[in-house]
Image (cartoon, rainbow, N blue to C red; front, side, top):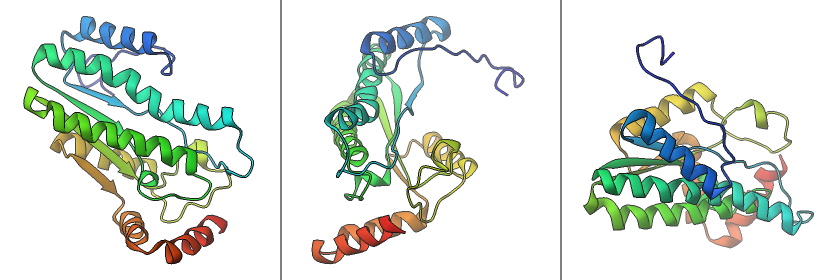
Length: 207
């Protein structure tokens, strides 16, 4: 689609959990296009993972995929943006970073760490001309998660999610929470006392 519209599309294969490989991708992209206007890190995974059976290795892998990948992309991007004097970094986070959702604990913990890191980067680097957008989708009906067994209330389609992401990037929104229905549910749960919130979350996770 990009090529047919007159643009140039390139792909690079790399291990996003390897900082050296991700730095090389960023450098290659700069060499190819001359500059970087937007860098969007969208790698991540949040499968059904019960803490009753999860191993240390499984949790570590989940954290690596959802936090280390961000760091591996963010650091070289900041270096390029700093040299340019401008740049827009985008990260796909999750509404699971806001409350502790059963069977999403390791995923939510990694995304919470990512949220704090990007918030700090935004505060620190905005005066240098850098912009940061964090995307917080609810459940999105991708092929990967369709049969993973995790309940997905108020799920939206891939197309709906993509359109909302693009709009947030174009507007350079600081934080984009969507869909509204899931965001309202999560915010309500966040405001509840733990004694009320936890039984509701357990019920939602068991449906």
